[in-house]
Amino acid sequence: MFLGEEGGRKQDPARTTRFCFWANLELWEEELPSPEELMPLSQTLITPDLALAFDIRNPNHHHQLPPPPPPLPSSAAVLPPSMPTSSEFAADSGDLGSGGAGDEPARTLKRPRLVWTPQLHKRFVDAVAHLGIKNAVPKTIMQLMSVDGLTRENVASHLQKYRLYLKRMQGLSGGGGGANGGAGSAGLSATADPATDHLFASSPVPPHFLHPGRGNSEHFLPFVPVPALQHHQQQQMVAAAVAHPHLQTQYHRQLGHFGSSANGQFEHPFLGRQTQQPLHRMGGAPLHNQVANSHVEDLESANANGGRKVLTLFPSGDD
DNA sequence: ATATCAATAT
DNA sequence: AATATTGATA
Image (tube, rainbow, N blue to C red; front, side):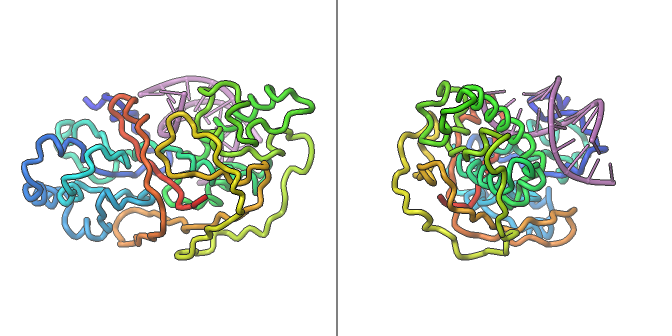
C-alpha cells in the first residue's frame, strides 16, 4: 500500500541511483508530545553515529539542497516549536512504518520535488546564456549552475519546459523582426498572459535565445568552472537600478529580486559556487556544509498540490 | 554506458 | 501547473 500520492512509484533500480532519503517531519506540530520523546525514537531509527556522520542540521538551517538529504527525524527532535508552516522542504512519505515491516528508512526514499525559485531559475538562465543554446544541455547547465543538490534530471526537466517557453516566445514575438525580447524588458507586460509562465517571466531572456538562427549564438567565456568559492559573495554587480518593475503573481514574498540588467543584456557572467559533491553512498562522512549567504524563501504553491510538500532549493546567488 | 530529448505520469 | 519519471535513441 504505498500507492499514495507519489510515495509508491515504480521503483526501478535499473535507473540511475535514486537514493534519497529524508524523513517525514510534518505532523509534529500535531501531536508532538514533547521533543524529548522524539529524540530517543529518532535515535533508534537512525543510529546516532550515522546521524552525526551526516551532519544534521535543523530544517531551519537547511540551506542548500542536501545531496544526501540528512533531514532525519532527529531534526524534528530539535526543531523549535516555531516554523510550523515552513515550506523549505518536507517529506510526505505518507506512512513510514506501515508499509513494510522491515522498513529501512535509509535510501529508497525519494527526494522532495525541487522548486524552481526565481533565483534558481536565474542561475539556470545565466548558465544557459553563457553556454550558448547549442551547448546548453542538462549536464553542462547543471555543472555551471553548481547548485549542490541539483540533479541532471532536475535541469533537464526544467530545460524542456524552458525551451517550450522560448518557442512560444518566438512565435509571439513575431518572428521577424521586431520584437525585442518581450521577455527581456521587464517583460511581464508583453508576456502573453500572466498565467503563461510565472517563473520564466522572472528572469530576462537573453536576446539570442529568441532567434537561434541568427546573431551570435554563444560566446566564449573564460567562465571559471566553479572555483571553490566559499566565502566572498560576488555581490554588487551592475548598478542597474532599473530593476523592479513588477513582481510576479505569487512570488512576492521572495526577497527583493532586482532584475539584473533591464536592458536585456547580460553583463554579469558570474556563476561559480559550491562545488558539486560526489554524493556517494552513505558510509563516509563526507559532507560539510558550505554555508554562505543565501536566502530562504518559501513557496506555498506546493501546498496546493495536495499534500506533497516540496523542497525549495535555491542558489545562494544573489542578484 | 551516458546523456539528451520528447512524451508521459504524478 | 510544475516537476518527475520513463522510453527511445543518439
